[in-house]
Image 1 (cartoon, rainbow, N blue to C red):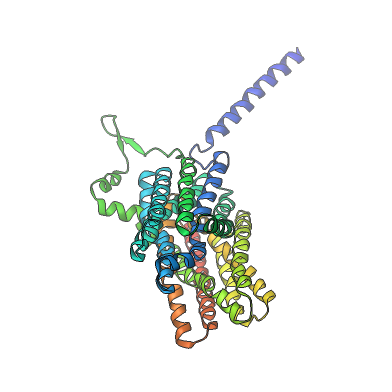
Image 2 (spheres, rainbow, N blue to C red):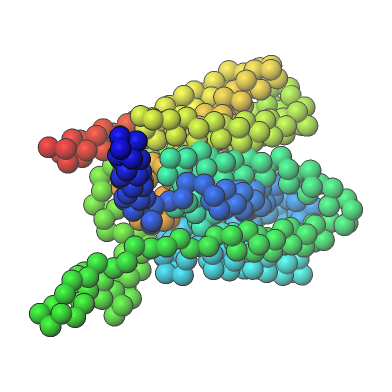
Length: 455
């Protein structure tokens, strides 16, 4: 009799345990990021997209001499072609964010791959440099920009606890493209007798990104909140969602740069921080080889300093992502520490005379400033909401694109007026230190917001 009661008790306890497990399963949010699974495939595909689009921009210098001789133009005119390409990629950020919110990440990335491939391919048939600026710079740059935003923000939706790590891996594609595509470009220039044949191959690389875009399948969205009216029929709770359908201007504003972000003080401070940081970032890329040559370093070794920056940038983005994923680590804290410490590198560059010294500051520059880029998505989510990630990233990308246009020219003007290359690096350091201070203000503002919410 006692044994029978014990069996019945075990059955009841088993049913209770199963019910508890079932309730726990039901409590799990079905709309939460999967934090793995297919997300790993998305991360790899986004990495390849960043490798192709950023790598193509960074290896423009490999093609520049050949293009210049072919089109018979000066250095200033030809370098403008590359600056239009890199600037356009980021300036279209808010408009790409709108398309992503309306169409989704998959179609926007695929469209971008087709447009960029077409721009590069048709640019190989032109012999006018200004038409080349349109096709190579504007058209291809727009296509790469259409790929860039979906690639970077996609992992933000597929990951939660590992978001910073996944974003760091994706962003490391930029550094990987620097040292992977550069030798490929040099090889193609020789084998295909010039930049025109080589650029057709790069157009093929862009078309390959169509396969990467196909992996960005949409995640399930939370259903619209509804309530019952007096007749028992379901009506939408958020009636304001209907207004944008008849107001195109408001739709563009809301989707590409949400008003909720424009009234978010921490986010606006982060935008100002990015404005100064991007200006400071591009200056050493432009003037470091020139400074090293002036100090007696060979042209080959001076050029290799940029490769060192790229390699360290790749490793640093992954490591900074892992660091930011640790419990209690703030993406904003990682950002301002990276900008502050990274600003020491351009400040030290004018004091370098030996090649080993240039290597040390190049490693420092690439490693620390990589963290600032790698944790952008986690920083946006930290100070706003996940649903504003695309709009926030698009806005920051636009700010960075504008800064990329004006940073190197200002430094060039300063060098021309003073006659000293060192002044460009002092300007870079000042901009990076200023961006770090503004980022600290953003972090403090966010802490104040969290404190008000808790009270």
